[in-house]
Length: 128
Image (tube, rainbow, N blue to C red; front, top):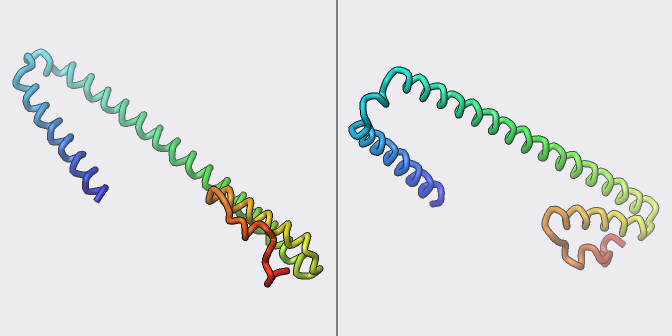
């Protein structure tokens, strides 16, 4: 529903701009429609389009850099947690297991804004 509203608003604004252009064409004097004025308008439009392309390119590049950084961090946390969990399984030490749980809890806390107390308390009967 939201996308339909946005598209209708965009259509209405574009249509209103076209009507305003038709009205201004009748009201403005002919000297505003000389060849020089048309050249200035074309150059200004080209400048705005070029700047818009540059800004959108920088936006996409920034988003990709942020995504790559988060992916690398998540992969490192996952590998670290798997190694600690493997060490806990092999050695049977509860300390290594609680360290793995703390790592996973910290990763989920950063991603979801918080972790339930049962997950980080170390009270997992099936794992201990």
